[in-house]
Image (tube, rainbow, N blue to C red):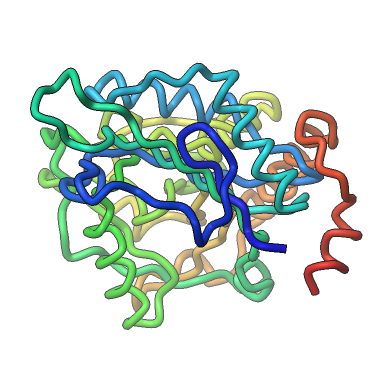
Length: 302
């Protein structure tokens, strides 16, 4: 069965999907995207993703004429069409083809879905190493804290990290505050207190980050959002990273420096379990309406 994508207003075969050569997202990176995941055919916290997309579109003057109900249906149609229950999805919104006047802009919408590929199990058993990013995050950059299609600096930093056999790289601001990973938010644990940079650092307001903060509140885990520096990173008892695909990823080393006893920490393990429970609880299989159970889907795609 050919892979289906949703482009602008309809489902099309991926080979038939075409974007204009004058699209502002292609030419200038004038666009936004959301990376999402589904479980049991239900996209985890889809409305949070759409809310973030809309906020960023308003802040960055990205033409956004699509209603949330329309976007929700587009996402679910892609899942159904590709018979995916466990999926990685991407919703991309650009300012569309460039016309002679600003009023001629029509946004481009693209929704894709592929089978969810998890991070290696050993990453969660033994933890990962992160590198220190050689670049800096500028708090005055207008796209800071937004998930834009101008993403190459992040991918370049991630490539450099992997050349050092690290799974991620930690970004700091131009005034030396801890910000985030290339594709993740970062949490530290010190004396059983959870610490993370505030959204205003600025950092991307991650959906997984928000979920962990909510879990901490429910579980009466002390959480502090504050400015953090390299000394806090090096003195942390535990470190972990979050996004909706990696979930809660334990960090046991920052380059050659061990984090704590270089083992996956107890609070990290607890929060990972609670995060997975949240996905299971919230994705009960109703809104996505895929025609297959996860087991059936895996058997067909094997």
